Length: 139
Image 1 (cartoon, rainbow, N blue to C red):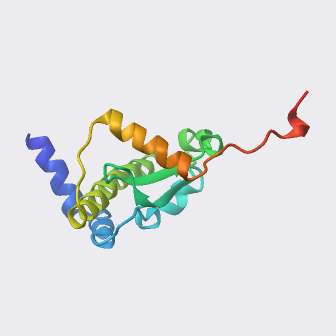
Image 2 (image 1 turned 120 degrees about the vertical axis):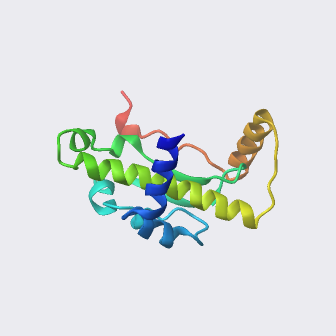
Image 3 (image 1 turned 180 degrees about the horizontal axis):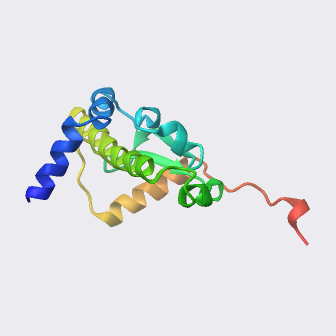
């Protein structure tokens, strides 16, 4: 319990978390640019925040894994401490955006199976289809 309180105190009061929290307090979506070392990390780990939320009210962040530069994340190109600060701040920002958006909107509780079917139906309504096959790649 003592470690948890110490960790939460650091996230609330220490830099660079304090600056990120101040920039995020009224946000309705994730803003990756305010995270510590965002320029350095996002150059090799292309994440994108999306306006809106999941059915459960959580913020959405997308990535295309094939664009990740894993070697740069592990060979010292990106400082390990910078990567750690970025991810800790990203998780904290997600919690802040989630709590600020859920307090201003109504909360809907439903079972996981209903959530999944609702997400599937929204996906089909949004016309999310795969692109046609590339003829140059076919044998």
